[in-house]
Image (cartoon, rainbow, N blue to C red; front, side):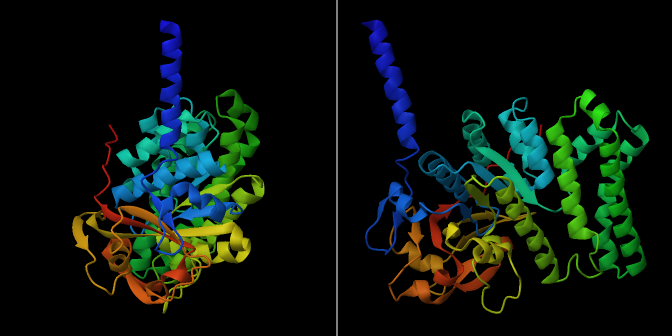
Length: 406
């Protein structure tokens, strides 16, 4: 009897855990009248192959937690199996190759080049990823060459082949950042010299890998790591080899260059994994369907919507109140002003819900030009129904619970 009782208890425990992935606190509605359980979202997303989960800023921990719940739902209920984070391509690819040997904490710190993601909320998502026996894959898609995990692994890989060149890896990546300084100083000569030196370094690194592939494999480098580094170097080269003076910080050209690369990388993932169902994790602007009024940036979401049409679903995020973490400060906010979209969404007295905007027929504030908080506490004006396919509303969010490197 005791053995039978134990089996029953284990079954109930497993069932309860499975149900927690379905019975979310997140609600769902298409008309702001009838709020349903999250599984009602299945029908809306049944033909979607790429869903983008936005965040109005990177500094909101509760947003991370709610999005993590959505990832679990999308994976378990709809078969989404590839998460692409707004983090370095190289970091994600190389960290995934060491997935089995990295602790959950080290994985969190490794694939996320964005320090906001070095948080307990993302760590808990990684615990879920770890539990799925590689059936849910996580990668990065950003093109900015400022990523510590990538740089350190590039050094380690080439060290047995050419120790002198290996020592230049960290130097060359550090020197890349001088492009911003030279642009600020209006020093065109040093700018172009530094740009060309960085591209030359990338070419040399790729050449060394190609010429010494057998040695690299014998020294412990995997074939997947070699291919990931080739692709990472290609992304850097295609993004920066012809970049013009004024394009590193100039607006909107700097955003256009970056988001063109982000789109091309996501497209590459889809072409190389045609059966994959992709979750994109990025800031609201990157994932939007069409330009905001008086905004000339061609964000990656514009190209994703044009390319994949209804197979792409953008879910923007809006938060009513809380505390936001910026690069060097935190600040409280509350959008108790009818000019804000969050003000209107908060009137429905829900903690967190998804509002589907496809085929939304009510003629109300969803069709009006309203404000939303964006990165750094800035605001953007937009019409919700035009900008996104859906809105994830969160009533309150504190800052992410950051974890330390050591």
